[in-house]
Amino acid sequence: MDASSAFQDTLPLSSDALLTQLGDWGLAYRLHSHIPLRTVEDAKGVEDQFLVPGENTLRLKNLYLRDKKKRNYLVTLEQSREIDLKALGAELGVGNLSFGSADRLMQSLGIRPGAVSPLAMINGVQNEVRFFMDSAAQKSDVINMHPLVNDRTVVMTRADLMAFFDRIGCEVTWLP
Image (cartoon, rainbow, N blue to C red; front, side, top):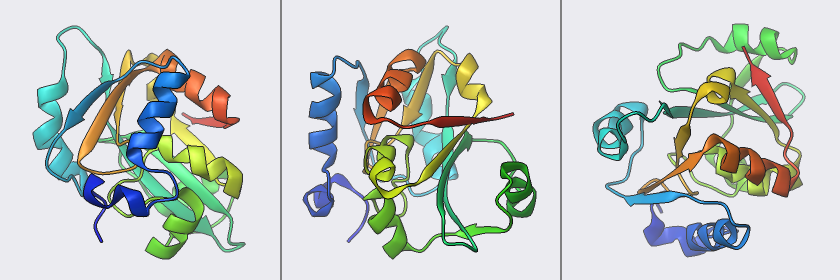
């Protein structure tokens, strides 16, 4: 199975259910459907279509990581930001980090590789996943992210994304 919406009914929370929940909470978003995006490079070619002139848009890359004590982390960074896992682990104060397996990703965030997104914290908060976000998000008007599948992108305002985190009880730790 891949991370596209064709298999969303095999997820603990489907993309459609997430989008309905966002609407029920009064959180606005623009939804775009597209080919499955598996990498940052794939996304760069497609996301230009979503840009609105004058909007400061944050494009993301998301890392599902674990430390030696088997604690789980979702780290969301500006798409072009360079990352050194050893330095990141030191910055977070958690020691050495490594990428989590596909099985653990499903268990902890309820998604498949290629669909990692801050919106997956709707599942992650129940599984004690710690969330870190690039402080560049604090300066953005809108943020592009996958709604639990990789063939859709939602564009949300920063304020609506922060309201989402409040709704689900997700603490955001900002990365400089």
